[in-house]
Amino acid sequence: MADLFQIRKVVASDYRRLAEIHVLARYDMAYLPHVHSFASVEKWMRDTVVPSQEVLVADADGAAVAYAWLHDSWLRGLYVHPCYQRRGIGSALLSEIKKQAAGEFHLWVFEANVDAIRFYERHGALFVRKTDGSGNEERLPDRLMSFT
Image (cartoon, rainbow, N blue to C red):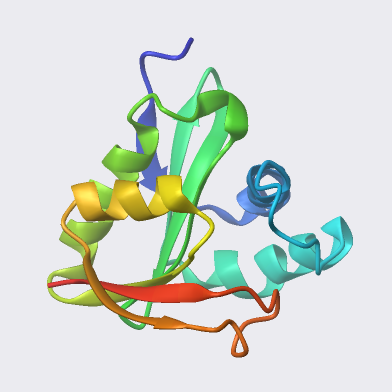
């Protein structure tokens, strides 16, 4: 169990590990269809996410184990490797994101992801509205939440 972790800014060489974290965390969500291959997620991380320089990474046990990406007042992703969940890493990343945002920011979360909904509510996110999922790639009902 990792009791110690460090949060830092992303570096270019993180892209593959962040893709692994992203894919593994999503694979643990049984309700979630797999709409992208690992290769496409890796390319997205390398070409879009990491170069944005708006990503925070949590390291534990000598490796990246989580990341959070805030872009244009939107939390685009907060993923923790399944082996490191429920250890305070996501909470610490979200706390740093709140500081980085310095104001209001928003996020989408799938309705079926009740653990994430509770997590964001516990940290102060407010419900804005629900959708039927027609606007997301997975075609799953989701909700818009906001931090003010």
